[in-house]
Image (cartoon, rainbow over all chains, first blue to last red; front, side):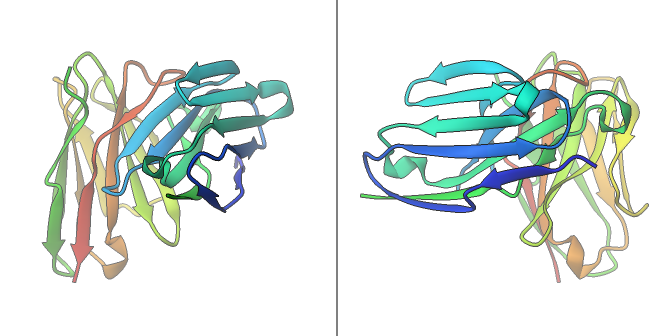
Length: 112
Length: 113
């Protein structure tokens, strides 16, 4: 099946620092999303980005589908950015119809 | 508009019992999917429903089942609970089955003792 690998697994920052999270996937996808899981467990959708670049405030994301990777950029990090960030993909067609495959996540800790 | 709503939020069950979890999707969304999250296995796909039909199923035993109603609300059931079923169960909805933004609910925390 499809492999989704996120790096780094852990990231510790001081408030105000910038960071880049990476997601590599092993096959063609028609859906790629970035999520932030809050301390209560909810997955908050950050970006739906199967290709191209998007920005939302201090966050931006880029997916290069032909090279099978996506990047999530966090600028001027705040303590509220702490949590786990997941990349999830849906393969094109076949048995992956309607199914997201998640990476193992990046645990981000932002210190004041 | 209201997000994906899951009930109950927290529950404790005994081994051997069964549990039913409920999910109300975002209004207008017809696809509902379920995921299990555990520390050891991460987030894993359980099943997906669209127009009351299961369109895809993950690699879970038959003790895990679900259904979708005509109003798109969904339930999942786990019978003969095992300790390893302790997990966060997340429901998600989207407008269609594939290629759309998927939105998640707050989850149901299940503890099996």
